[in-house]
Image (spheres, rainbow, N blue to C red):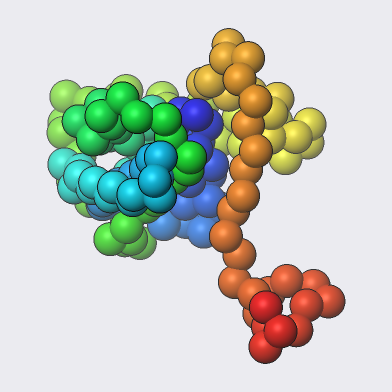
Length: 144
């Protein structure tokens, strides 16, 4: 689930031409206790794998083994450019950019579930992306 959520966050970043400097996760466990953890990346990113790796690391440090009621991945400290990445990883990052550009085109044409880093998982997934009530068609934000 973390990987799928990370893909959704990274896709929205690419759609808006933004880069996240910080990745945050939210866990809601039994008893409605919320746990938030965040990590600042070495450089701002919009690459699925980098965001997923950060989210996975945060999850393993925060999860106590209790059943999870809610899981969220968030991008913070948004920037208009990637900034200075490691020179050693530059070619790898460029390959990921080109790959994700092709993946985004496939998802646009055939749907978001066409290609995924988490495609091998057979778990049920119910996405609830929080939208601004003012942008919902046919909804009066004052009545929400």
